[in-house]
Structure formats: C-alpha cells, structure tokens
Length: 257
Length: 313
Image 1 (cartoon, helix red, strand yellow):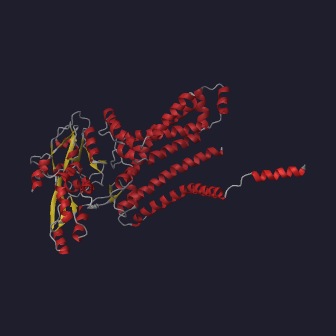
Image 2 (spheres, each protein chain N blue to C red):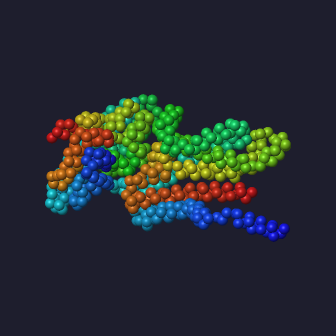
Image 3 (tube, rainbow over the protein chains, first blue to last red):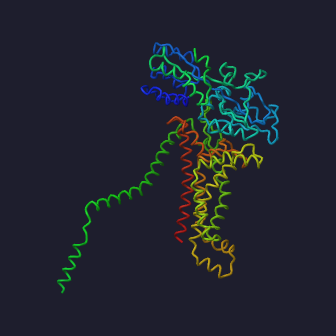
C-alpha cells in the first residue's frame, strides 16, 4: 500500500504545506517494526498487527498501539467473458496456481470453453516484486510457491487485458481493473459454500475471502499534526485518493464515526 | 633591390597577426576535452564492467547459491517464502530461442532489403526508403512492446492455435522488426563498398542482375553482411522493454514458437527494482547481468573482428 501512502503524502503537501510527510517503503513488517522501535509516527500496513507486536510496542515505548482502517483491497479472480465458469473455491484456485498443483485443465472444473480450442488453463500472474503477488501467495497458496510457467504481467491492468484477449486464461488483479472482455468469479471460502462476488460491499462486510484492510497504526492517542493527517486520510479527500489508487474506500457510515 | 626585398619580407612577417595567448590555451583545452571524451567511452565501459561484477561476485561464494543450479535448473523462485531457488536455465533458453527466431525473420528480410536498396532500386526511391527505414530504427522499444501486447497479440490469437497472444512468436516478430533497419543500413553499406568494376565485369560477361547479386556481390560483401547480421543479433539479445511486454514473461522451457518465455533482460527489468540492495536476489540478478554482458560482448566482438576482416582486404 506504499503507492497510496505516497499519494496521500503528496496530496497532503498541498493541503497543509507546513507539515512534511515522509514515506518510506519496504513492506508492512518494516513499518510495524519501526513503530515498535518508536522511530516513526505512523505505520501503514496491509496486514493486521499481531498481538505480540502490540505487546512489544507496549514494552518498548509504554504506549498502547491504536489502529485505523483507511481503506480496503479486494483481489478479484478474472476469467474471459466467454468462460462459462462463474464460481470457484479457494482450494480450487490454489490447486490451479500452486507448484505441482492438481488442476491444469478446465475440464477438471467441469468447464468447456466455447470454441473448444484448448483445455489447458492459462495462468496469468504478477511479477514476484508485486505486493498483489505476495498477498495471493499468502492468502490463497498459504505461502507455498507458484507453479512456474504462468504469464507474469507487469501490472494489474496488463493482467486483465491479457485475460480479455485469451479465452482459456485465469488470473488475479484488483477489482477496479475490470472491463467488458472479462468477468470476475465468485469466490467460495470452502467447497460447497456459495461463492461471494467481489464488490465494495462484500469487501466491507468481510464476506469476500480475499480482501484485506489497509491499516494505519500509531502509538497512543494521535495528537497534533498526526491526528490532523489521519483525520484528513479518513475524510472524503483522503478516501478519494484510496479509490484513485485502485482500492476500496471505507464506507460513508464508518467514516462519520 | 635585395634590401628592399628583405624589407618587404620582414614587413610581411610583422603583419601576420600573432595568435593571442587565450586562443592557444582554449585550443589546448578543447584538445584535452576531445581527448577525454574519446577515452571516457573506455572508462565508462570499464566502470560498468567493474560495478556489475562487484555486485554479482559475493553470491558466488554464498552457500545458498549454486552455479550448477543456476545453469541447469529452470526453477526460478527468488522470493519464495519456503524454498528460494535460482535456476536461470529457462531464462537463458528463452533469450536464445527468441533471438534465433527473430533472426530467422530478420536476416532474409534485412538482407533482401539491403540488396534491393543497393542494386535494384532507383536513386529517388532509395532515398525515400532509407529515410523510412531510419525512422523505423528510431521507434522507441516501449512502443514496439505496446504494439506486441495489443496488435500482434490479437492477430496471433486469431490466426494461430495459440491460447495466448504474448509468446515467443510475438516477441520474435517485434525483435525482427527492430533488427531489420540495422541489418538493412549496414548491409547496404557493405554492398555499396563492393567496387563497381566487379559489377561491370559481371555485366560484360553477360550475367543477369540476379546472377550478379548471387554469384558476385554476395560473396564479395559477405563479411560486411555478416557484421550486419551480428549487430542485429546484438540488438535483439539486449532488448528489454519490448520483450518484457510481448513474450508473456513466463518461466518455462518453450516446446514450440507459440509458448510464452522469459528473457534474461526482461527478468532483470522486472525484478531489480524491488530486490533489496545487497540481498542475494539482487546479486543473482547482477549475475544474470554479467551473463548478458558476456553474450553481447562476444557478439559485438565477433562483429568487430568480421568488420576488421573486411578492411584488411
């Protein structure tokens, strides 16, 4: 979520030029580790803070860690529009993408692609440097490795574009990138359960299984400039940046709270 | 009489303007700058060489990295949580296969273009064609990549049995289009360098135009044409952005020209930005850089030697 953090910092410069927001990346763990050491004011993390990390922060700084949800990130699973498949379970998804996975053909999912050119599943993935890649690996593959040979695209948009051009492809990308040539699958947490479509609503009520919240963590009650900055992030202006960065903004109701 | 003449002589010498001191200094300075810019090319190459090697070397002694695995395994898992593996075989095979296929398209097209330009084409049309071909060479590689990703990809899906349009064929066609201008312009120079007396002698013996090209010009210009092809190969091996976008970027050993591949260059471009500086992943990426360096160096060196071979004639 470093992209949205940078976008916030950049925009905030015009809102309040007196406050300099400095952003550095490295992953959620890096930010939380720095918060525990007390070297930063605000940690952005696209995972939840762990209990032992809260305890470490308390021990180190004597302060209680407080979290704010600044937005959500839903990962959609895309197939070509002509693909009759509408729903897939997390297990099936993992077996398609994981190293030595058992699903390599569409017929194993009971699907025949119209035109019947080829039954082999074309996997579309992201480059290993991508945060989306890492999130998918952690959440869907359970930290196992991807099967080699997937088409590893440069960006979220390219993933969707390639799937739109390839009837037998399947891939994952942010839900904001959908176009008319592809469709998003409903995802079932367990086989047999009804699938859930990725929408802003199912992301917010956490029924969509591969979504995560974008968190802000601070020590103690935020005060002064930090408080103003967080308030601004949670305001409409900050949330517009969340949406523009391809994430789901928090709902208007929770924004008022 | 003679004294008058000598007087005239001294007057002449006096009237020649003395060069001011600053002009002499500026001239010396300019000479130095020119000399420096000449040497700087060598300095830059050396500095890059040293830097790339220095960044790559420590990984060779790391116990998590094995050179044998690097060259023989296709398992490229640089960021795996559980089992990091650095097998670059698929990347090496990908680079070579897409280059070979590209050359299969570009060499006939490029040499054909060169022969047409130098032997069969009127001067007016030649000038127009040369300008257009030079424009072709000036198209940025990212634009080529974009054409591969959008236009070529759709055409390939439409006209072949490929499941995905971004593959080796796509990358090779794009690379061929990028290499053709180089082959044409250097190849045309090589053909032009063949003395006209050869052509005249051939015509005097009653050779047709085609016989002249096939029996006389091609053998006479073969070194220059080979150099043209080698420089085209160098262009293809080193190309990054277009292949990153057009080949599908998949780590596999290709079984056919419709399979997606990944090249060494594209892999560096995709991963170096996020690999933490000094990490093992970073160093292995530099090692693939060393490998690329070695490949392009060999190609360029052989092109140079071939060109030297021509000059000696």
